[in-house]
Length: 460
Image (cartoon, rainbow, N blue to C red; front, side):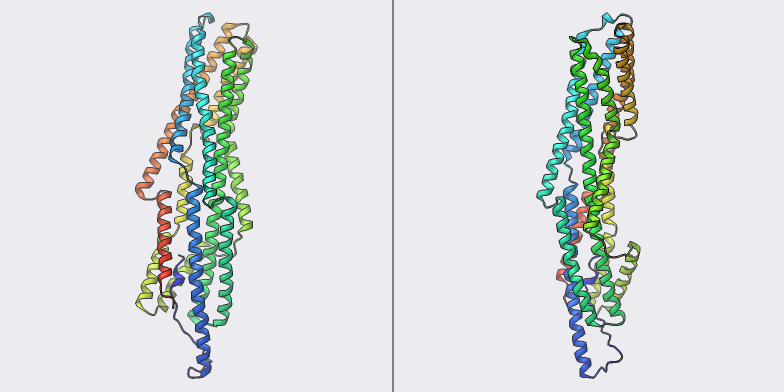
């Protein structure tokens, strides 16, 4: 798409008012040829600058969206261990409370403590995994900043590139007024200018879209990790209170409210993180739109028609077989890259949607949170309403365990299920050669080839 302007144009149409045999005609033709020669040189320089901007966009996308493989494996495993430990504790507690259904004295305190120990390990693993993900995100950000992809540095790079292109386009516009070309030659020069501006804005928008999405997704992830760590630490606090209740029975009264708070926080976690991500995405896009405003008003469909017309003019004005073949190669490269950036963006978003654990699933979490709140309410009622009636209190706690078991079981199954779906989806993309990493690599190769063609093409 970028390279069609690199082919030298040769239509030499003279105004009908100029005598072809006069000295004035020779001077006019020489002046016009010199202006058009400078325009062709500028076209090559502008194209090379735009290719450099496109290459930076690919580098930026690969860097800011880098996701280490161990994060995709380690975090679901840690969350799975958390859910498994909590489910193990709940089942153990149910077993003991069923033993004491008619006689609470039959409940084994040592068995309850062993179950609480299991839950302690789970909550600490869950909290540590989320804190570890926050730390990993910080390291990824530092790595991106070191590679020249920080928010401010990346904007500066794109601004400098756009500014340089604008300056060359301004010079080109002045040369066009000096060239005074007519007919198809004039149309060709004007088409090139319009499409150069379109490519400048398209690549700028591509950067804006990647930058705003990457920041929004980072805020989404980190907000969820922070909430998840808080939820697990709240559950850990409830477990500590459970241990203390063996020596200080009053501590049992605080366990229920803490569990209710943790369940509510877990329930609003996905929504809160999604809102945080969307707000940051929109904020970043607004900021980038102010700092990198678009100039042309061409739609993609209008640009496609102009590209097609440009290809026709290049074929009509080709003066030799080499130039004609070069035009055909450049058109083929353009067709191969049509929509590639959008495809990369779409598949990257799909993969990010699959890289989730049960606590991030909007269609699962509200139900799980409701069951968690119900369990906490039953525990609270059991202590504050019936602590002097152990039989009723025990049965209420048993009912609380029954309420939370389905939630923990669903979380235990949903996390590996989503992980398997994510693995299968990425594997299928790789088989088809449509994984974002493969597409980005192909695009980088195309840009390098395009740069070589433009650099080595005859500059006539």
